[in-house]
Image (cartoon, rainbow, N blue to C red; front, top):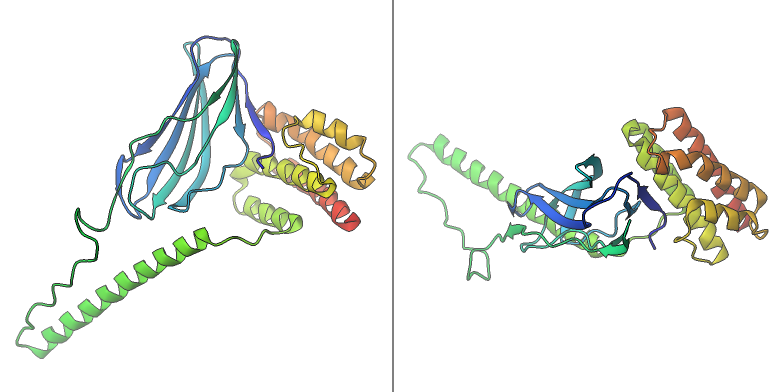
Amino acid sequence: MIAGLLLVLAQVSGGAPSARWVFTPATAQIGEPVVCKLEIRAPLGSAVLLPDKDPALDPAWVLLEPRRAERSEHEGLLAIDLSWKVFALEPGAHAPYALEFPVETPSGRVTLQPASAELHVLAALGEGEDAPRPQKGFLPPPELEASRAWVLWTALGLALVIAGALLVIIRRRRAARAPAVPAGPLERLARVEREFAADPERAREVVFELTHLVRERVDAARGETRAALPDDEWMRVVAQDERLPEAARAAARRLLERADLVKYAEQRPSRFLVEELCSDARTALTAQEAAA
């Protein structure tokens, strides 16, 4: 279940909320990179409640670059653009994510489901074909022995490249459909720390991942689902739950309190702050694992 919400706030009002998918280019081959953009528009003064982690990717797609977000305000309108870079493994026309999210407007809450876009992924086979075309064969070899050898080696190389590409596509499709073995919370934390060390520009995204990971593990330990609670309400409930180790409760409270300005005031965290938040997350997870 998606835990945590990214709250985007503005100051004035007007207009009606909407969301739609846009693909660039609109027509692509299998394996060709495509920019998949979700354009969200709402009146100023609205709160767009987005999941802090993407839902499961459709098995027909491969993610090349993770989600990026841009936010702007002009002429009484709040504009939020989310974009991913992907490529398709199958022909057709469909979006890689199934999204639905609420928007709090000055007139009340509405639930947005992005309008479908026209993305055409071309099939490897032509219209009316149900099997690969037969090979046309090789041209007659030239008279010289050296030229004959060059043609044979070139044909062999092309055959190996095509076979390798087909093998990669088949393996990726099987891996996408095979159930993944879930990693433990400390293993997931270690992965987040490695990714941050390799790309410090992901600092704000890492803060969201840390709070999501700690809240998810604490709730799982008690067998309760509290993902819909805001961070401050979740901290109040956890602070009174004496079934949880004191060290886990204290570290989780420090983490969420210090992450508040990053998540909701959109401040850019420093490297030192992210490292300290990682330390708080590790303390909370270690204490919980020891108690379990």
